[in-house]
Length: 195
Image (cartoon, rainbow, N blue to C red; front, side, top):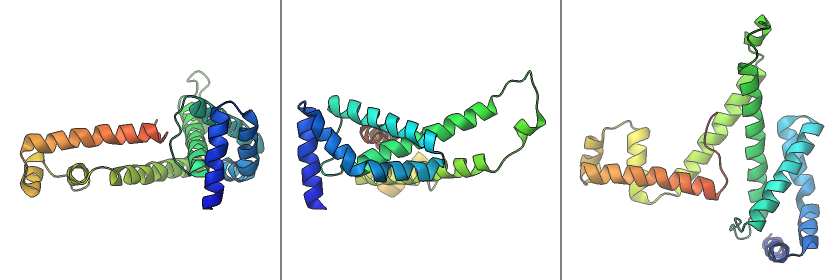
């Protein structure tokens, strides 16, 4: 695995320096796993091909802009990009269904198919998991304040007592925790918003 990761890094550097064949080698190495992952989520070959292409465009653009910095983790990085695009697809699909034209009223537009519920569950589970991982990357003092506030639903007065800092310091730590979560999410190309 380490050898493959090192080879990935060399190919990535070569591609960034203008060698398009290096990216072709990477693509050949991972395209089957990536495509299988996408199709397992969307269950439609044409749609999977569209999302695969969109993933490749995002990957290439990110590499060209110098936004890839995950040493030795190329496959998980492209899988995360694909997963985010799958979630975006389901969000858009749900939104289109919700905002159908009012002119041609159809009672079936308002009946749940169950499919949307499963998609919502999948989206919310993924967002919760990603958020949990992001919170774990915060400095300990910020993580503690955020958990006490959002998961324990404590007031800042109580948080300041428990942590032994002033209310203003607790507020500051919360503010920085939220800023850092957004920053880390952006760096990792993670979309935390339920649209």
